[in-house]
Length: 300
Image (cartoon, rainbow, N blue to C red; front, side):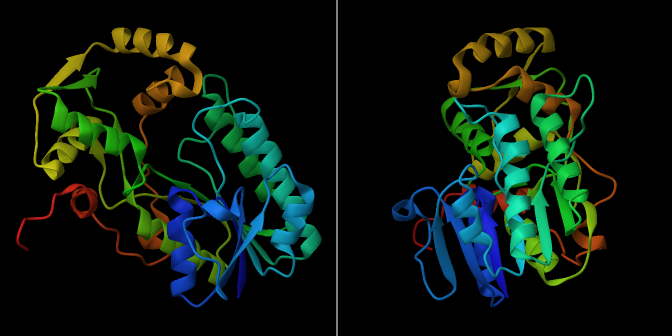
């Protein structure tokens, strides 16, 4: 099967492309710079140069493809790359190319918490609007809403691991009770591959095997690094004020007001399709952390 992938050079995308290759599928991946891709073009992996704003590139990407997997998304706006232009306009453009090419399935990555309502962050509002475009497109479609994705490409986890190695104590926003359900990146990638092979359609929420609080999340990262630290509570009003100040830094901000809001809202689901629908036995959060944060034992 030939599967077209957007976002295939990103954190999740690299694992999705690898999962598809391991299962015997050919992939065609949209890339901005073919000379800087994380994989070597081969009979199984073809690179198409371009972006979501390039209709000709999207036609080349989707030509003769059986399935389209759309993974492109941003966490912080940067210049012309706004939530509206990437999540909404970009999804609309990929859908149009997929329909024109006669692709039989469309699989889209959204996020837990996506909703188009007052009080939601622009990230979540545009994610929901993109979901509706996909579900109303007339294509046979599956929309994935993963929780926080655990793996070596997760920037916040890497940052917290560095802080555990450098600081005597780790700041925690508020009481740290916010629920999370981290999903291992290879489990998520396998779910995308299975969705490409099967007829499951609709909206699917995906998480790991257990819900943890943000407090437990940070402590687990400390244990995995081998440098557990005491936690220092930062009152939520003070954290919000600091995040608001960081907003002035734009894409360089270490934490934005919207990111803090999404953290406090929580990121867990009681309807986990990973095992119930796709039959994947999910890897535990701390076991995943150990796979990429734990230092190898010298001499082993």
